[in-house]
Length: 392
Ligand SMILES: Cc1cc2nc3c(=O)[nH]c(=O)nc-3n(C[C@H](O)[C@H](O)[C@H](O)COP(=O)(O)OP(=O)(O)OC[C@H]3O[C@@H](n4cnc5c(N)ncnc54)[C@H](O)[C@@H]3O)c2cc1C
Image (cartoon, rainbow, N blue to C red; front, side):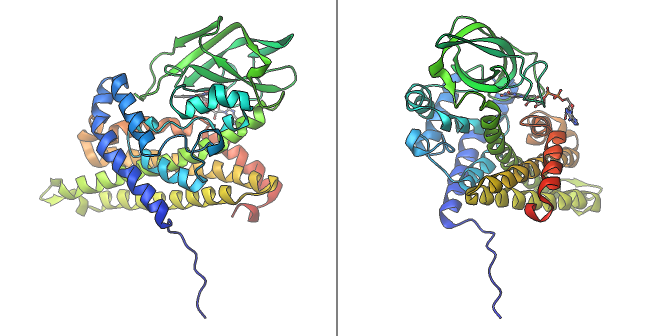
C-alpha cells in the first residue's frame, strides 16, 4: 500500500519568498550589524530609511494586515517564512521590514485612513503600550485609566518598555475604562503625552524602548480601537501573532548560530586537529541542530494551524500552540547561543561576533510578549481544559 504523504516542505512560492528575504538579510542587513552594534543600536536614520524603502520595494513589509487596509495579507505560514529569515540578522535589523500591529485590523474605516493605511505606507509609525510599572505579566490590571468626558476620553497613566516608541508617532494604548480594558490610538503630539528614555537595556537594537507618560490626555471617541472593554481580547490576538513570530525569529537566529559555529569549528585547529573533531564540540552542535529542527517543526505546524483555524475552539488551540512554540523556540535559541559562544571561545565574547550579540539579544525572547512562566501557565490551563489530544 502506498503510504499517504505528510508534506513538511514549503511550496515553491514560499521557497522563493524565503530566498528573496534571505538575500535581503545577507546582502543589506548583515553587513551593517557591527556598525549598528558599536553605535549602541543608533544606526544613522538615513540608512534605516533606505533599508525600510528597500524592504517595502521587495514586498516584505506590512505582512499581517489585510490588503483591504493597505497590508499584504500574507498567510501565517508566509509571515513565518519572512520572520524566520529576518531573525538571522542581529540588532533587530530585520525590523526594517516594518509590520504594523495585527490589532489594527479592528480599526474603523476612518481610523484606517488616519492611522492604518499611512502606517502600512511607512508614513506613520505605530507602537503598542500595555506594560506598566505595576502591571506586567498580569495585563488585566491596568492602572492607566481612560475616563469618559462627553464625547472624549481623558487618559492618565504610565507605560513602560514601549518598543519603537522612540521613532513612532502614535501608540495603541491599553487602559482601564472602568471594569474592563479598552484600546485607544494616542498621538504623541497631543498635550499631556511625554516620552522618556529608560536606562540602557542589555541589547542594542535599532528600535528603542520608551517610558510613556499620559497626564490628562484628551482623545476623541473616534480614537477608540475596537469596542469598549475589548482591549484585553484584542491584545491577546496581538500576543498570539507576536509569539509565533518570536518563535520564527528564534529559529532563524539559531540557524545562523549553528552555521557559523559549525564553520568555525571546522577551521579552528587546537592540539593539532580541528576542534570540530572533538566530541565535546560535536555534541553541542548536534544538540543545537536537533533542537532547532524540533522548534522549526512546531513553529510551522502552529502557523499552518493558525491559517486553518475556522472556529473559536480552533483559535483557542492555536493560542496554546503559539505559547508552546514561543516557549520552546526561545529557550532553544538561548541554549544554542550559549553553546555558540562556547565554541567560538574568546571570540565568542567579542561584540563584533554574531554569537556574542545573539547571546544577549535572544535573552529577551523569554521575557517579552509573556515570560516563559506565563507561557507555561497558558499551556497548562489549555491542557486541563482540552486534554492532550487537542494539542497534538
Ligand atoms: C526590551 C523589552 C521590550 C518590551 N516591549 C514592550 C512593548 O513594546 N509594549 C509593552 O506593552 N510591553 C513591552 N515589554 C514588557 C514585557 O512584555 C514585560 O516585561 C513582560 O510581560 C513581563 O512583565 P514584567 O517585566 O512586569 O515582569 P513581572 O510580571 O513582574 O514578572 C516578574 C517575574 O515573575 C514571574 N511571574 C509573574 N507572574 C507569575 C505567575 N503567575 N507564575 C509564575 N511566575 C510569574 C515572571 O515570569 C517573571 O519571571 C517589553 C519588555 C522588554 C524587556
